[in-house]
Length: 123
Image 1: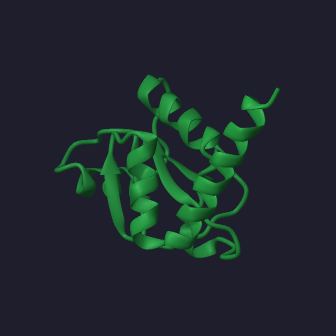
Image 2 (image 1 turned 90 degrees about the horizontal axis):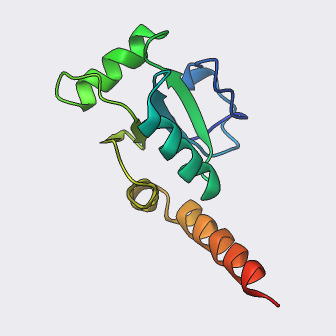
């Protein structure tokens, strides 16, 4: 799968092959009503990690991908990047996955997070 992303569009799944490859993203597999999905989504957004969402209830290919990654189960949230997948990860684990496949992006994300912390500690 691709490692680049269009603007986030939670309600619609997109085929990664049809995506503009100038922006970076992780694939975010979720389903409605999943509190763990919403928690991870907010954590990734706070970290500045762009997501391409796939609702496994609306997208059979997404459900198949999650089952493949999760040992036959439809466990969400599942995050994919660089051909690897994490099932129900913490945001830090997603950042580690990004660092494995795209160290430059990981460094940018960490730099942005450090800048945010400095800003809020001022004053």
